[in-house]
Image (cartoon, rainbow, N blue to C red):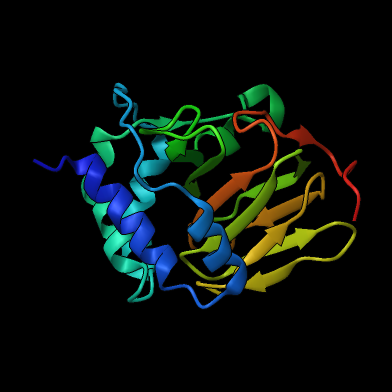
Length: 201
């Protein structure tokens, strides 16, 4: 009998399948979706209080995934890479991620990680970079994104944002929270990002 985790993976895959992007289609096709489940204890975070608002904001194609995550938030293992020493307690109280699959997610995958990032309103995720190549797809709009030495630009829900290896990037939310789907490949999948703009453009 399918578990909630099976359904989470199914909705994650279904959303990716509907994104109109060759980059995303190629990446999704490379993922081996027949993954083994990993037993994880649930872990909840303060940022999960934004999930109902996220589900209300999500466009029609993202709503099945966003609503499912909101409804099952207390059964999933949420994580944080940083501590208050990195960005302050206000950031930590409004930040978290759910790894659906990867080296530490609900499903085992050593080649690629996929999951969801949450940021609360009026939060800056400062410049950071990492070895892994990254694709982000915001499921809510209104957040400003920056890459390399460029300025901040608002990205809409469903836009595909690609960060090559070691390219620095930052996000700044407005009056609404952000949920963004992410895919990581080509580097340590559980690496803590390097803070600062040391990455190449």
